Image (cartoon, rainbow over the protein chains, first blue to last red):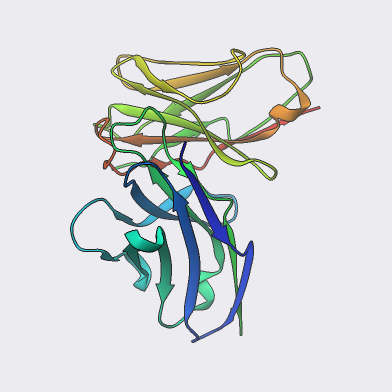
Length: 114
Length: 114
């Protein structure tokens, strides 16, 4: 079965600093990978996804992520944090042809310090 | 297009009761998935429906069930409620049942079991 590990349940960065949220996965076959963001009292919004092709994926709000098969990682980055980026971020995988829906990590709460 | 809508947004029930939650997908979307979100277990896949048929099911007891109607609207039912069923229940819709299809999430229904 597949699994997702997000390192750090809470990450704090200063406004304007680099944001790095870590995601590692375990899967018997190469999965499709997703990053979602959840603001308080709201559902999840897709930031970006990797299915095939270029391993560096650009998403909304200036976020990007790079799929590294050798490291089984899909870390999320943003060059310069903004106060509005404060939210919960979830990494997720889905197996091509698999029977399950999205498998999520536990989430990382991003805190932006002024 | 209107987003995914879920009703009701908040619900309070007592142990032993049953509950029905409703989800209206984005117009044109034929696939609906349900997820349970709790602080302890995180986000977990419940089931997926496509064209009125349950395609996949997560690891939940039979007390959790669902259905999809011809207009793609979906309901999920939880019978004999337990305290541990208190959670945010999220519905997501996608155009098809392909694993690369983006799942768009609704705001969720917050269920509290007393």
